[in-house]
Image 1 (cartoon, rainbow, N blue to C red):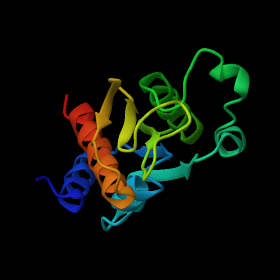
Image 2: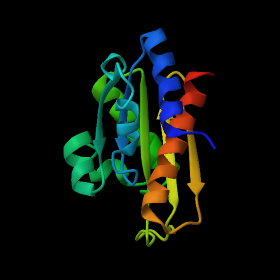
Image 3: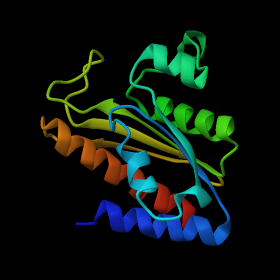
Image 4: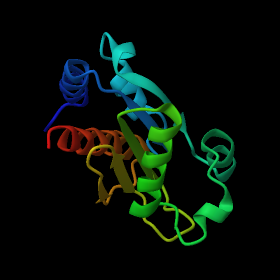
Length: 160
């Protein structure tokens, strides 16, 4: 299994070599995506910032995504993850943006998604998204899995 720290190091090397940057908007990963990217020495060369948008209030205040913009978008969905990625990329003037949203557990969310459900979006020269269902109710294990999935998707995008 791929290691988060190793993967973050590989991503960091690519971004630094290309003089590219990344910003992160995450929800159910709780800051772990940002933490993984920041744990690599020299992160200030490529990491511009991140936000944890765990609530509607955080989404409004930190990313200025108002309820009207969410009219036809369900939270914990790929369209919402893509919106988060795009907005955080624009707000930080980053080369790449990552958006993540889901239900870490131990229970599902109010939209009917089971624990272990996340959607990740990457915005940049290419835009990608994915949905992951771990089938696990373990909150910490899910947060780790969500982080790994987000980093894998970012690496896939930046190496295309």
